[in-house]
Image (cartoon, rainbow, N blue to C red):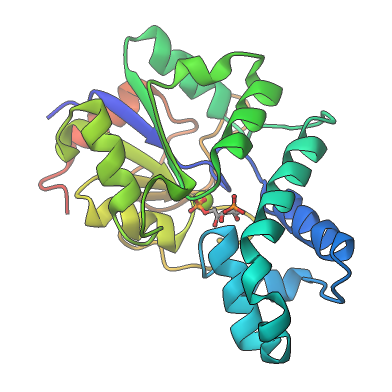
Length: 254
Ligand code: XBP
Ligand code: MG
């Protein structure tokens, strides 16, 4: 079957955003007078939990149980402030998409392919990233944006991908997802969607075996991706034609 829609994850897939998230969390903790600091090592562990509020609660339970009584009731407030900070910081410029992302988005749109987003992060974070990286109004390129708390269960649960499918009005096998993490690949897979993985700073050692191909990034003609497993051997950059060819070649979605 040829696919009709491309569904992108955001964090780690469109751009390397996790250090910007980490900075926004840490700045917010400072604002609230908390003596918490998430180092890269701590954050790598916390990233197993998707969603900022869920991540903060997990941190309290596992790293700072003594703070639970004081902080439990303000997790929502903390997270709201973190989102506002992230948006302010991203608005300062310097946002770069990962290799091949803008090229593939524009190529897919020009070819009449439908575009969607399925992400755990909050909607304002998606909008600022797209506006900053692709120009104001870039969210309009995406027919469907399924994000954050629009679903009850975050990745690796399939809910956010199921929501994207429902809003697109398409079956899973008419879509292809692009993800960067174990949680993301599992979420798409549980929704029945074939998934290509491009590894990111925090996910390169994760188990991505359920992706039908694992690459370093989407590649550019003059900056080829590294091929790690599955589809993509001998190629340099991911194109719509190549994705269609790979999809026709799959025996079963999984
Ligand atoms: C990304 C995330 C997000 C961000 C934080 O996962 O886990 O939680 O780190 O975003 P994925 P919020 O790329 O799989 O969607 O603080 O807005 O929740
Ligand atoms: Mg991701």
